[in-house]
Image (tube, rainbow, N blue to C red; front, side, top):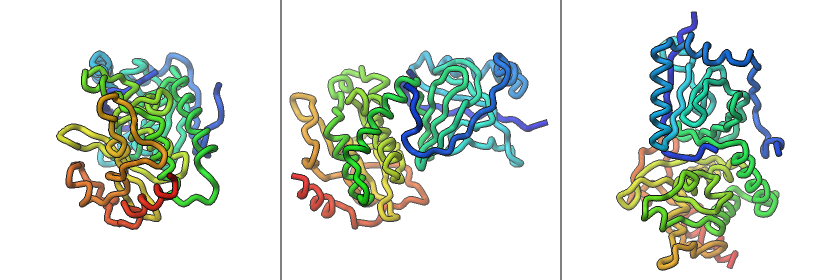
Length: 322
């Protein structure tokens, strides 16, 4: 008998809401269809009735609190630890239950990209995007939201990325695109009425409004499309929770905090920067530079120490864009 063990991932509140081929070449892992209605019974047989009921109750409590929780049954290794899915996503051979869909189902397909894994539920069609960031946060999207994001990323590649660009030039295009098209919903943030979409890439790329989490995830989507390696950082800035990115350029890691480099214009809540007008305070910084006002749990394999593409290089790049 297989040794099964549950895994729960809880993430910050985020949105759950024309089929086309994936934007980038992906590694598709199809799920073999099974008899409809068997998933609930399978979950009970693998987890036991009591544990299954507890997981469902926890997911529903998370839903009532506006949070995302995903749990699954997963085969354990010889040490009793659950075997994770690709990029810390949902194991492809498991059945899972989420606060979004509230139904047991397997993964229909898994699309692996350099920084993420995109997985779609067999029964509901909801996409779950997990970034290889060490935290295991899943961002759920309805099919409509998911393909709407792809509908923004594809034109970005066509209009902003040219053959022969360096990784640094691609990164600068991403930064400038986000600062030109995304506005921080400052009034909603101050009032505590920021929406679920404000915290994900759908809000940033499709609706054009997002807080730091949405900026950071949007950066990840565009970096994946460009083939850049990136990380999603959860930390603290200015005494509050804050999210930003790290990006690898020529084999070395740099911090890039697009939200803090694109602040709200005082008095009107609008975006005051954009193409060629960045303030260049938090772009391609080292660990030591960021530690002056940012705090985070460092990645052991991704120290930021190089300055080749730091402020001086960014200034030269921006000067050529004015």
